[in-house]
Length: 81
Image 1 (cartoon, helix red, strand yellow):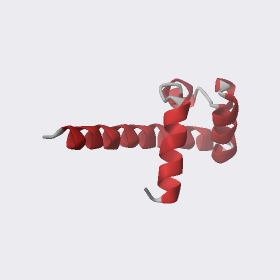
Image 2: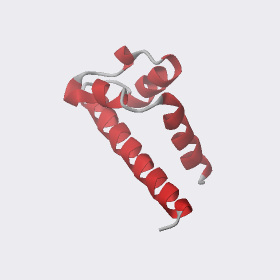
Image 3: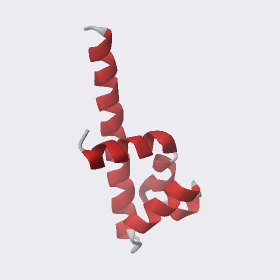
Image 4: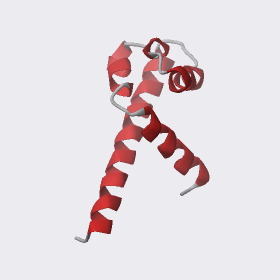
């Protein structure tokens, strides 16, 4: 495996991890009656963890993601890259 393939593989794994965490956080917010998109955007903009519920360990999970990495993944996905 060359260096490029290894980096690409690690990037895919990181993207998958972020997707899984965001999905879990989204579901937890939804289950608690919040608007998940508004809450997640509030968290991203402010980095205030109180935007995210503790339900199903969502707050702990989302804090595992670096905000810059999260934004990069979201922009890449949005632009289809």
